[in-house]
Amino acid sequence: MDFVKVASGYLILHVIRFLCILTFWPIMKRMGYGMTFPQVILASYAGLRGAVGMSLALMVVTSSYIDEYVKDIILLHVSGTALLTLLINATTTGLLVNYLGLSPYSDLKKNILLSVAN
Image (cartoon, rainbow, N blue to C red; front, side):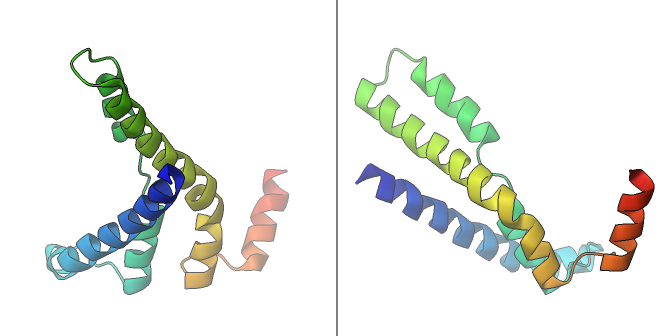
């Protein structure tokens, strides 16, 4: 049951991040960031979740004042979210960039750049 909670927490984090970015999107446009809606989608999807959380979870695990069960649950949820972010978000962000049309290079330019680099 805890793994279902980790997966649902992972999905809820995506929704919360999207809603936060969408809420502040008009303010960011007025400040000069000028994000388009596809960029808002990409920013909410591609943002990494886990580096700071993992360090805080490891601090909790080393504490002697917290019950072992609570330590295990915190470590499970934080590491599960970080793992899902690496497995799902990191591997599919390139596909999302292409799908949203955010790639600045055409396929021809990409092939030319690859041939020059090799």
